[in-house]
Image 1 (cartoon, rainbow, N blue to C red):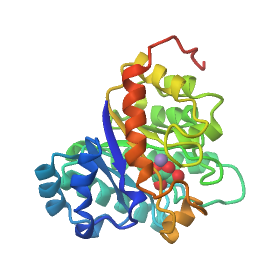
Image 2: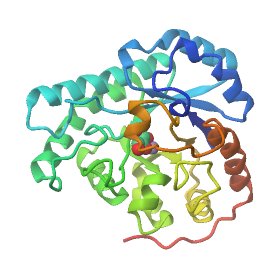
Image 3: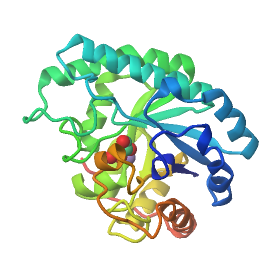
Length: 290
Ligand code: LER
Ligand code: MN
C-alpha cells in the first residue's frame, strides 16, 4: 500500500510557495502527495518534480472541472473546454512525475440541472472519455473517475454506475476512484462497493464520514481494510480533506466548521491510523454486491 496526503487540506493552489510542505509530508509517514490541481497550466510541474524526487515523495493529482466546462453538456464549447482542461491535467501530472489523475472528471462539482442524468448526457460523457483516453495512455497516466455523493453531483453517485460507465468507455487507462466519504453516503456498505469496482478500481480516498481525522467517525474501516486486503489492493490510499477556510474550495466541499484542531491533523494523525489498520486487519470474506 502507498499512503498519500491530498494538498487540498492546506491550499487551493499548490505551488512553489508550498514546497516546504514536502519534507513535512514525508516525515509524517507518507509515500506521496496528491496535488490538488485546479489550474494545470500554472502548475510548476518541472520544479515540483525535482523537489519531490529530492525529498523522496511520489505524486498523484486530484482534478475537477472548471465552471462552464462539462463532458455532459449539449454545448460543444463546454465539452471542448472540459476535454482541454483534462488533457492539461494529464500533461502537467506526467511532467510532475505522476502516474495517475483522479476526480469527478465529467462535470463540475456542485453543478445540477434539477433532473436526473439523461441518456444523452451519459453518451456524451462516454464519447468524451473515449476521445481523451488515448492521451492518457500516451503520457503514461492512469485516470480514476470519482463518483460523488448526491449533494455534489447528479451524474455518478455510486460505484456500480461508475463501473458501468467504465465498461462503456472500455479503455484500460480509465477506471474508478472510491472515496469512503462519498461511499458512506451512497453505498449500502463499503465492502461490496469495493468488490463491485472489480478490475476498474484504480485509486482510493480514505476520508472520514465528516471529512475529519480518519478513524474518528463512522466509516466502517474494519470492512474497508478487510476488503482491500482480500483483493490484494496495493495502490494508493490517499487521505483527502479540505482546509476549513479556503474560500471557494471549502465551500465546494461544504466545510462550514473546524473538523479537527488544525486541518493538517487530518492527514498527519490519520496516516498513523491507516498504517495501523493496514497491518492489523485480517482478510475475511465480504459478500459481493451482484
Ligand atoms: C470532492 O468531494 C472530492 O471528493 C474530491 O476528490 C474531488 O474534488
Ligand atoms: Mn475524493
